[in-house]
Figure 1 (cartoon, helix red, strand yellow):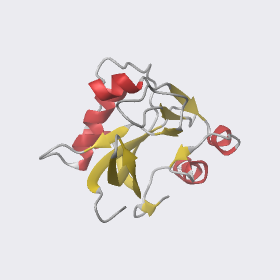
Figure 2: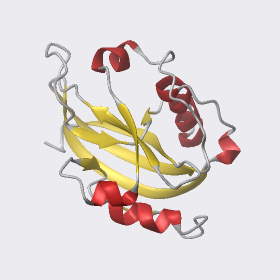
Figure 3: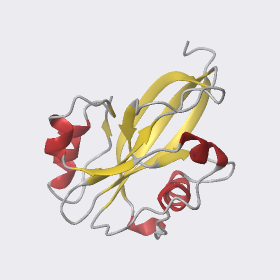
Figure 4: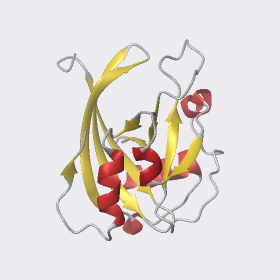
Length: 166
């Protein structure tokens, strides 16, 4: 699958509130011809880079589109994680190359007005999660090890090299 997959560099943001909860969106869409069903997995805001965009600029644009949050690119900490995921969407295999940043101490009410047509079609719920809730949940998360790697981020500002997550 990976040999013919479309390479998709993307930027994601671990949005943390002052209590250390992370904002996650619930993926419900697998194909444009199939109505969204139950949440398949929970993931951080973010998405693919557009032509001429840096990862940090893509992260900022995606925050504005998906959750209605305008931020200064300099406020993003990191990158903190790298993740590669190969999988299908709408009949096309994608080789997702994700770079994660952190945005801390966010107090924000999610506003979906800027979502793209595809994001509107997906009608994704959002929820603030603690690391404990993630660890104790039967839900799927991206990255899979989110509960563990999130705890490391909650210890304070990221000073190391980006970590590979799955």
